[in-house]
Amino acid sequence: MNRFIQLHLLTSYPPSNLNRDDLGRPKTAILGGVNRLRISSQSLKRAWRTSDSFKEKLSGHIGTRTKEMGIQIYNQLIEKGIKEKDARDWAKSIAGVFGKLKAEKKDSPNNDLEIEQLSHFSIEEKNAIDALVAKLVLEKKAPSEAELKLLKKENTSADIAMFGRMLASSPAFNKEASIQVAHAITVHKVAVEDDFFTAIDDLNKNDVDAGAGHLGDTEFGAGLFYLYICIDRELLLSNLNNNLELTKQTLSALLEACTTVSPTGKQNSFASRARAMYCLAEKGNSQPRSLHAAFLKQIEDKDVLTKSIEEIVKMKNNFSKVYGDTNTSEISFNVLTGEGSLSAISTFVQED
Picture (spheres, rainbow, N blue to C red):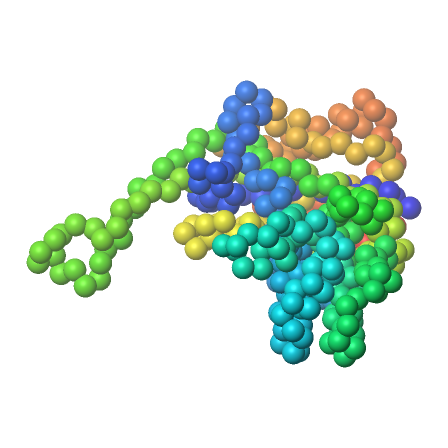
């Protein structure tokens, strides 16, 4: 088996603010001594995991990440006629299996039913919770120690298998991420720009006040982003209980998502939806490596996409020359020239 699959993507975004910092500005990073736009890996993974295409391709194999499972359980018990005190105690017992609960606050109703940190529930665990809730309603008694063994090592939730899970209170049920996603960065220098805007009151006929009804400003940037993704295919297969068909399905869903799904930030303001313009996929057993070094020196060519592709290929070939990586197969598509296809790369990444 080819253990590692590596994806190198170039995606051009028009003026946008896809991923904001705490001040509302587009996130940035310094690379090669100059400022670049950045989209965090967390933002990218969130957009892919919640996308319609991902849900469609992996229907029935997506977990639930939430702090509020205890509240959901409590509401279910109340709706089924369980007394408030019992419903609260039983919900705490079940939610507490997945993490430490928050301290009770009088001004925050049901706050004590929430888990302190986001917990990722697998399909198997959610089914076990639902079955236990139904049993408690039927028998009208508190769950036993045996019944509270809800954590599962078996897993068919593709998102947990890909991006991992950490349970500080139950490390035996952690999942190591089989897919590593870098922060996307622009291949060239970028300056974040300001957009001053006004909104006009439709009922203002300028007979009293000719001014705007609202004034505001937002910040944005545009650029060609390089994104690197490393997939440990063996670990992904293991995380999915050695289910080969589900592993192939997961790889196909990931490829479609990372090439076609944009982060959701400020989409209504900028409509900055984009698809990858170039994708290089590699398979092999050699130690993986990003090709971001191709852009340590910013791209300044007017034909930035063509030049960026040339630099990626050059860097890849130079790595092979220096390190002697000879067991890697590859395939690519290039939207600019109309060469290759997404379906061909999908077949490539699914094959052993």
